[in-house]
Length: 393
Image 1: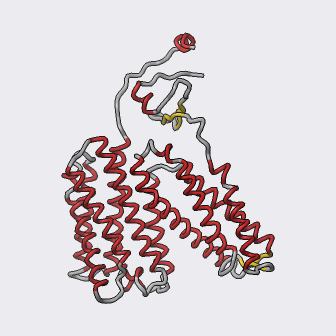
Image 2: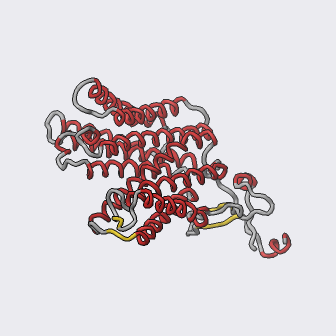
Image 3: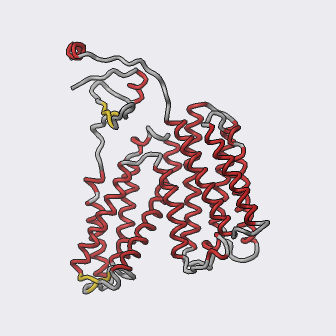
């Protein structure tokens, strides 16, 4: 086996012992990835997904017997295969996800501190649960449109249920196996975009856009819980990400008051987003007033963060400054096109503002993660000759 020399700091960072090996992957013209091989680590998805599948299938059979469904079972609808997967399989798979995620806490300590791990665990679990529920709802809705009214006998129904359950259980355990802190960012994107699109599609009123964006979270919408829960969960994911990022940033560059102020502004913005979801804009009264105040505070805190980005992060890429100021110009222009001259509707202004601000937050998080993770250092290269390799053996 070929050998490689590593500086002591890299050797310690990879936690290599005398008998451990490293793996070099992603070879390209000028870069590659290096990681320690942990022979004790097991991929739980490939070995353990059968257990939650078997438990869910047994519970499904018992529920069929309990509710007297012994002849024909529909694929979708009430008391169907789809409802069994949504309730039984989803619950059992999520329990297996939680147990597996807790078992991986030591491995995840390389990416986040123990404090950050316990702060984010509830948010991760709820985000995964919501995302899986939304995906299953969309999937079975699509299936119901293709196979309208289809039903199966008991044995076939149990087999189809077991297949769906096996796929779901394997997927959730696979997510645990490959989980990294960057997945919180992907969860935020999928929950925010997926939840909002789902609310638009299933709200029950094709002309909702004639009023405003917030109508999706009111009593006038059939999907108000999806819209409001999406806002609350997106806010929780944002707070978790900001907490991890700025704690890691302080560990790397030390305490700086400008970073604390930026974290405070971004966290307050996320809290206001959560309150917009917690207090639907149902008509007049205190709820309407509070909803509008929190919505306006989002604009205030986000505007201060964007306008002051050069002071908050003086060593970030200059292109990010130009992009931030361009976003401020777009927001100012869209506001002018909406309120004084009414070229844009309120809904168009809200969607445009949300889109550019959300994109700015994603870019900011990516830029901060690069500062934390991409530690660059130059080393002198030394080639181990065949004679040296033989002598060391």
